[in-house]
Amino acid sequence: MKRLFQVSAIVLAGFATFLIAIQSGQAEWLDGLRIKPSEPQLLSFQQDIEEANNLLSSACAIKPIPRGGRLRNLPAIRGTTPLSRFRQASSPNSIYQPREEVALAHPSNFGRRFTQDLSGRPVNNEPIIVLHETVGSGSSAINYFRTPHPRDDDQVSYHTLIRENGNVVYLVPPNRRAFGAGNSTFNGNKGNEAVKTNPAFPPSVNNFAYHISLVTPSDGRGNGARHSGYTRAQYQSLAWLVAKTGIPNDRITTHRLVDRSRQRSDPRSFNSQYLAQLLATFPKTNDISMQCTLPAIAQEE
Image 1 (cartoon, one colour):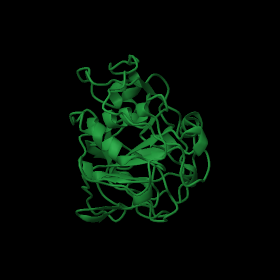
Image 2 (tube, rainbow, N blue to C red; image 1 turned 45 degrees about the vertical axis):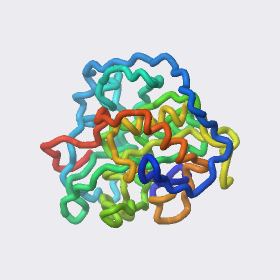
Image 3 (cartoon, helix red, strand yellow; image 1 turned 90 degrees about the vertical axis):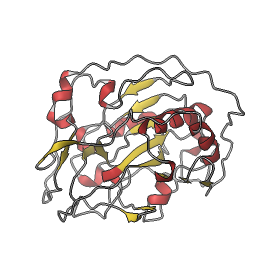
């Protein structure tokens, strides 16, 4: 089973109705006041030469093809990755605009989204959002994702990470498959949803999930049941980011809730009601799309 950063928490079922499975700890509340945003970090939306690199293309892959134990030795992607590879440009939001960073994960730590499962059955799951926490520091998580891991057991990633100051860090393009929840299923109104993409591992939600992780506060760097909670800026940036995916609230969940092993608890001390309040202030858009493009390639790298 792929190594994963420990995480916990709570499913969102709508603006008004949220299932609260853990208490909020000492996470700060907005109290009806808008948080003064940081000045946005200007990143280029221009197409970069690396966007044409096959390792970073948005193409789907048709079907998982077992590698027979072969290591996944891939080169690092050089050059600057533009912000347009992670979200579309949109008019500035008058409510809130976080700083944005790009820290592209090593390509061994993410893959393509498949149009068929391992058995050749078509897959067409609607996207979900899975919320996580890093457990360790944000820097250690980013460094791990940017390090090559040829062995399947060592590969892990999120699509996006949110620092304690609210900065949004893009790690894996949204139309690519991040390795965030290895043994997992989403229990939605269509029943249990999971896709098997590797013969060595159980089915998971990764083929249709967008993984977002909150950096854990310093008092939560361990296996405790709870910690002091996340910052107001993290919640504000999370709501801003989730709104840009256009994903319905009833398809927003947590690592704890999708984990089949029942060993994950993240994001701990998460305040779902607070997030619901903030989500109501942002219009839903499709600036972040998880749809990979056709024609699909025969197999991923």
